[in-house]
Length: 176
Length: 240
Image 1 (cartoon, one colour):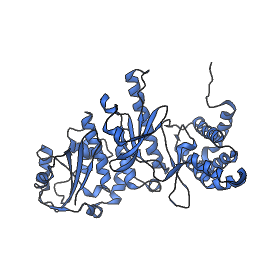
Image 2 (tube, chains in turn green, purple; image 1 turned 90 degrees about the vertical axis):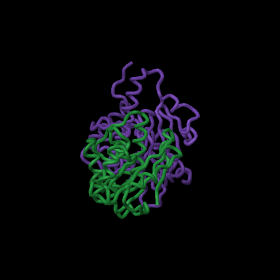
Image 3 (cartoon, chains in turn yellow, green; image 1 turned 90 degrees about the horizontal axis):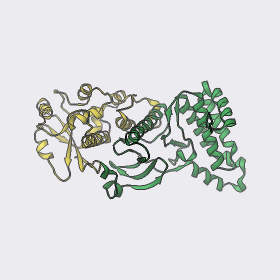
Image 4 (cartoon, chains in turn green, purple; image 1 turned 180 degrees about the vertical axis):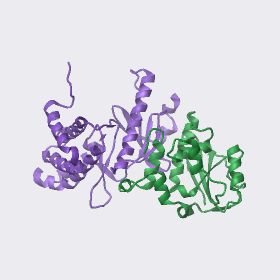
């Protein structure tokens, strides 16, 4: 049902990702995340091709926080910012963040080694937790290629996931 | 921050040192669940700290930029997972089931009866075509690799009919449109081929003819430059 992975060993943090469908209180959830009362990041599934995309963006966010080099103020916004190619913070948050009328969302939870706060976080969502594999039905490959500006010449020599993560890893100093 | 690069950390136990070059150490291991190579650039104690940090950061940026530019142009390069200026590391995809072009050529040479040059050249023709085409694309997109050797090209054994070649180590690369730099780039490869692989002087010619087909508009000027560079050596001005 869920996906969990250890992030960079210097950070002692792990990442858990949940796929939720039919969430009826997106507006309420969004407000809690913005206020910081709900400690997670929520992402539009249609723009996520592969969970590794989130892993690379979140790993970078966690390291930037540790190194005091975040571009935005919170970890949750830093992940959304990292996912986007744009260096405009507001646009990035709107593009990858969940809208008030969205029903499907990926919930990203960063945990300190050992602790498990996922149940209490997920309890706020009025929706259904689905197998993470169902993400493939929600991701919009055409939109993703357009968003990350990946052309066919590149796809002849790279998987779309590899092209995306390379862009995420270098977004600070490259433009496509 | 010093303790992060010091001995005995989690990094040292997770990753294995595989190569130590003049500028950096290479490690292999698993990162974020994927087979990964880490390139960590040294601190140079003879340089002022700020200058050293600045230079390292700029070099890491141009290296990562070149990797991405190659992908955009349709040249195979490792995917990048993290560029960390603080720890001076680039985390990248570890290309599986690959050998360096250097080892591959050596292997083919050994298996050729009595070092028959014609036979050898025929066997190496498919990879030479792919390399030439790749370099033509590289230069047509104004990317200078800076260290074209057969150790910096990986041949992937993926069972496909056309050889799959991955270009690696962009530590000296830059974006430049000058014919001079492209000529030098090719010259470095020619020297590398001569010094590491005896008996295959024709291989470079095969690579060049494939290069010309791919980089049509400026190849004549580049080849002319290559002749100039051959006559004078890699450095343009020699003083002292």
